[in-house]
Image (cartoon, rainbow, N blue to C red; front, side):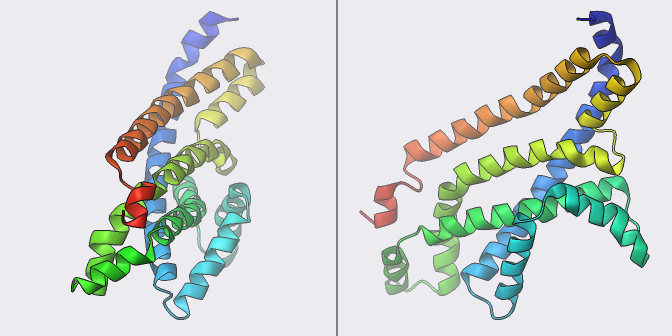
Length: 226
């Protein structure tokens, strides 16, 4: 193992690390927003728009992020619309992640028992109040494990951003391997970089999930109204 090579190239990985974090953060944030909107549209079965939302989910979930990035980066310029590499990466991650988040939110909302909704209505709450105060808070707690998995999945998907000429972690690793043939060293730094991102995040999300579960949010008893 060439430790001098590793030490010399740590600054490159630091820059790529920060870029990857920034793109992942913006992409995941946008995914949560889009996922929330799509789940609301499908939950309330808004005419026509609900079908469009369903088609978006099927298209997004059944096409790889790599193909979506190809379309954004190489396809759109053919019709006169050119986006920067970073814009393509963020939009692609949002397009992919939004569908997964939408399904997570929707499954959480559908897990709420009908009895809770009927009881809240009987108490005089309006439809929007039932949703805001009864359904949505519990749905978020129920959906958290799925949302956490989606977050981890989307961060790992950033490894394909190099295809649109972004100097992310994967791009730096491939460049160093191609130039210096120091494969073991480059891959070691790549693995460590992703571990630094994913391991603490995974632990934090697990702790949040556990606290919510211990508090009773989204538990079987609360869903059944007992």
